[in-house]
Amino acid sequence: MQDEKMPIGVVVSGADPVASLEKVRSLGLSTCQMSVPPQSWWSEERIELIKKAVQEKGVRISSLICGFEGESYRDIATIKRTVGLLNPSMREERVKKVFLFSDFAKRLEVKVLQAHIGFIPEEKDSSDYKGMVEAVQRIADCCRKNGQFFALETGQEPAKVLLGFIEDVARENLKVNFDPANMLLYDADDPIKALEILGKYVVGVHCKDGKRPEKKGELGKEFPLGEGEVGIERFIAKLKEIGYEGPLTIEREISDEKRWKEDILRAKELLEKLR
Ligand code: MG
Image (cartoon, rainbow, N blue to C red; front, side, top):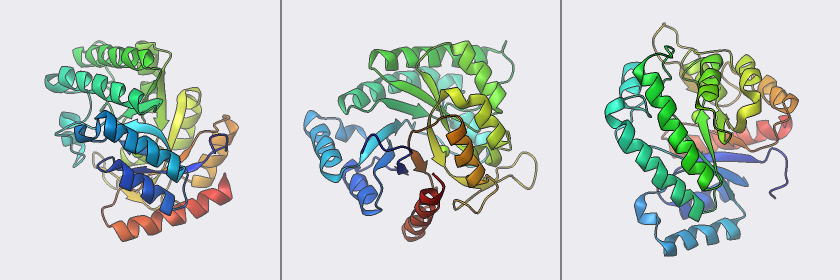
């Protein structure tokens, strides 16, 4: 199973990891990215339960996604204030949270930890930029000690800004989870060109679709895979071109469970034809 090229997976909640693994299997998928389960799942006994479910259901957890209390994606200003490591008043506390997430991921034998770290400032001399570089260095060092990659989710800034940031952090285990739709939702870049720029750092991808915002400064809109402006065919072709063989993880951020399942199954069908 683990040798399959481009296995298709899905982003799921870690609120109940065992139920989520069952859901992934029921969709006929073999891999998933999961939000870090709440601390009530961190005991030895419950970690064993998750590992047993991974074995029994034949579903691999390819990465754990870090989230922080108080994050909101309501609009650009709120994202700047609440998401990731940009806001200095929350930075230290969140870095320490990621250390704990990394230790938990190690016990669960998951090799990639990933996060939206928030908008990366374009001014390299600013204290926010320097603060974020230092924070990500410490996180990457902790992940390295635990045998993990730390992957940054793309899309909130142009690929060149992210590339410059990665080079400034200068840690070999710092990688990218490439989300082509985010590039459009945040009107940040062209997804295919961005993939070319960041290609060698990509250890995971989100198969998500979307359209650019109608008005500058607003957020674009997410669409079911194949119905937005990413050009999923071009996206998968470009992944092959850069030699990417990791999971194709479908992401669909809607709360209607029935529609969510329908969209995931349609996306799976589409990806099976393209990969
Ligand atoms: Mg994403």
